[in-house]
Image (cartoon, rainbow over all chains, first blue to last red):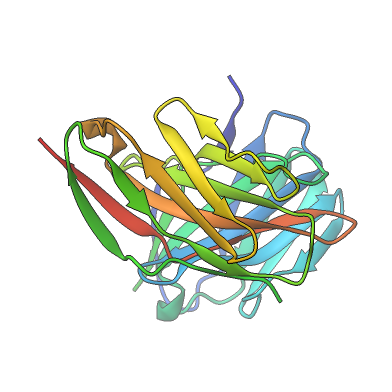
Length: 113
Length: 116
């Protein structure tokens, strides 16, 4: 059974903390993504990576950074968490090429207080 | 830039009935893929159905089918014989292929409630 695993289902952090969200996939996918999900806004792409050490900004990269040191792992970093980063974060992975299916993790609901 | 619009934030349907979720999109591309993803209360997002723009025939997967109107840039999802397990958030998505990789552009979602 294919899997994308996010390190935490729920997370509460304080304003100003550095936050790491981890994502691991076991499908040997080249592509990995971090999305943010907010009510009424759908899923918005924060960053994505198409290879180890490669990363590209998505639509809302401000306040975030990412790291991909190994093919199976893609980390999202909030350098200094703020309350407006309270949200659901979804990690996904896929094979390269048109029309490939994306596989998602179970999501991390982050609350910044 | 590609955009995806879902104009129905919430819908409700009785068990065993049929419901149609709407999606429109905008692109200047000629060949592309469109998807419907389902996110149940468990939050695990899964693929429901996929459509390639070059294919004339509408995609079907068991009780799920699409009505793909390329000229109108419309991509609606029909769920037949609705079941309680169909209760979920449904997202329409466009496959934005940029050469090096492809990424999904999502609509804002439709929350479907199936009533017993």
